[in-house]
Length: 310
Image 1 (cartoon, rainbow, N blue to C red):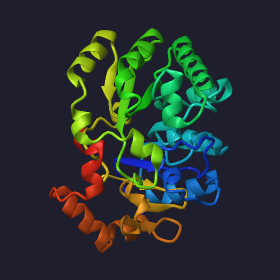
Image 2 (image 1 turned 30 degrees about the horizontal axis):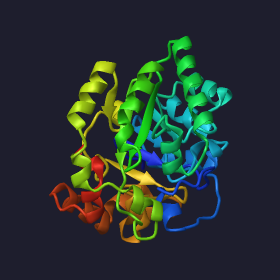
Image 3 (image 1 turned 90 degrees about the horizontal axis):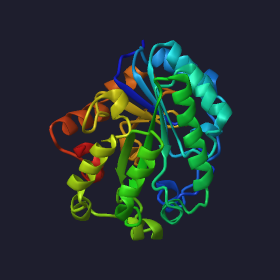
């Protein structure tokens, strides 16, 4: 029997076309077998597990557009009257894929673009791909305007030691190109000891909160930029919305409450290939986790996460 939840984040594949040193998998040199979830398997699991409408976010520790079936997944969920977001690093967001997403009425396209400055982007992503990403984003924004589409671009920008001094430049770039939504992401402590770039780029809470946020927010407001969490435009909540209200589902169909908790088997509550969603949500570990979380007993990983306090 299918159940109703507010939000589901789904990882459609395990491969990426970048090796960003801030990615937890890269930082700890953890490898997974390359796989793409097929549309047939996705449809079978989601039809028997989840009652629409809900918000679905296609996003994980991979590049979503490398899965050739992800477009069919988007179409399927839009046909079920769900709100759909898709996250991408932007490298494959070419004219054809952009047109397909807009044709299907995707609600939100989340693009990782930490800075319009090549040296800052390269420091975070260890890549010289910025030019292509910016070209694809600007083409998509032009196409949204040409069609008068309701689809929105949200820029995901990781705040690091390299990017923090240049947030105004990002606002100015977005304003100049008619993009109004940006979400700032604070790096978590995961894998700091094994990731030299993470150690270099990490900003602790004291320094993060010490950034000139009020001045930055005033600048954003003057330029018509909405500073938000990446899924705020769609789901309309603040703070962590996952425990008890939604799930993170990996490309292996492991079920946890958050992508960052999915690294710890203690917080993987089941697998939708082998179990029903009722079995998973009814098991004692899941129910106890939700009870503790709702009572304010947050894990160390949660206390470090910016989503909890946004």
